[in-house]
Length: 86
Image 1 (cartoon, rainbow, N blue to C red):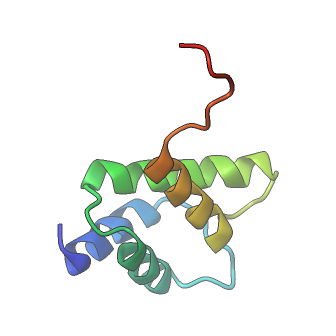
Image 2: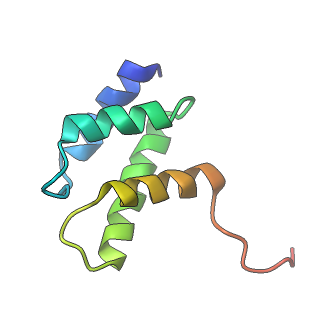
């Protein structure tokens, strides 16, 4: 999807979540769409889910932009390696 399509996909996935009071969902969708070139709809859904998980781990009532950025890094890079054994 192109930038506008990714922004629309983010808007769909942002609808059911609680964002930090300082955040506007359209601005978050626009910013996250710009940070995710080449991401598919499933990747975007995964980012939103991971952001919610990061917020829950902080015992927060709402998702912050930092949660979204951490989630993007996690989806982009995968899970961190805990050991070198295969």
